Length: 332
Image 1 (cartoon, rainbow, N blue to C red):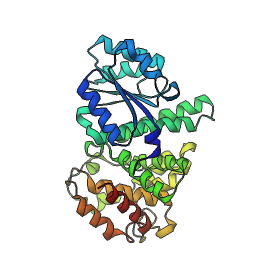
Image 2: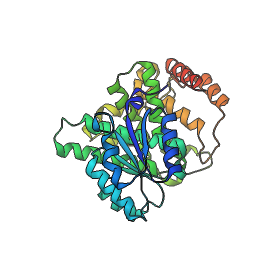
Image 3: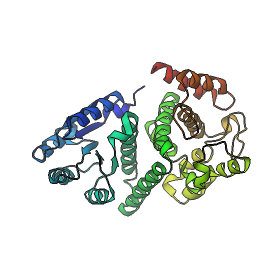
Image 4: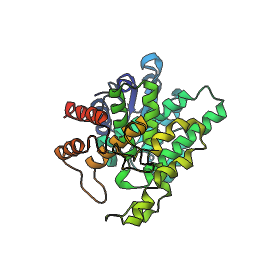
């Protein structure tokens, strides 16, 4: 199932390396982005490429930055003069000095194409676009509040990504699957945006969990698991002072509750669990089962489907589980 926002989003790929440019264009089209244009990043053509989009404005530019070439920096400077939207830098050798220089020119984030693959590219693009949409949603606030809020969101996303190499894209993936399930449930576009943001921050409380527990490859002891179970309430307490995130807190706090009442932190049961929390719980478990972790290999597709069916009505909301199973079978 393709997200309507992906189909309507204008994305430009500017990269002088033909193989990299082609990879990004194919990966984004496969992910559902139907309005993708790819060009070489020559300074002489930047203005034409940016203005050629619908209404003379793109939603996102992926820029292949080669920090060793002055021409690449010239292209980036010109791009930032001509384009006010988010720019995601791709390529290699994004060391701290390169990042600092590019951030001063207005780059939103960086991504190593070689390391991330198709899924990493898809999830990073979705995150940058979602963050930009949140920026738009708070435009009615005064400019200082808006700037602070967006900066906080950006820092949070970077913290989440840096905690564990095995779960680098986990929160982004959970956000993607949560939105897909929520769309099946009939949530509005605004609700889907907020649900996606809650999913993006669902594990934020893990910044308060010791690294030796987070990175442990063996089964956690009872005492360690007791500590781990604190991460939803840690997130709630950390985010509670941010008024624009207030509606996300129930989902973040209760995403480990179970349909049968045996979850945590409050042993909520059935529809007493907030809807968004039920959706995130399902998406979270699906991504955990289907990806590699420090303690396990990814489950096979048949095993994932079997586990979802087995836990339908016990761990997971049965209606939402049926939605996810239908999505997975449609996209087999």
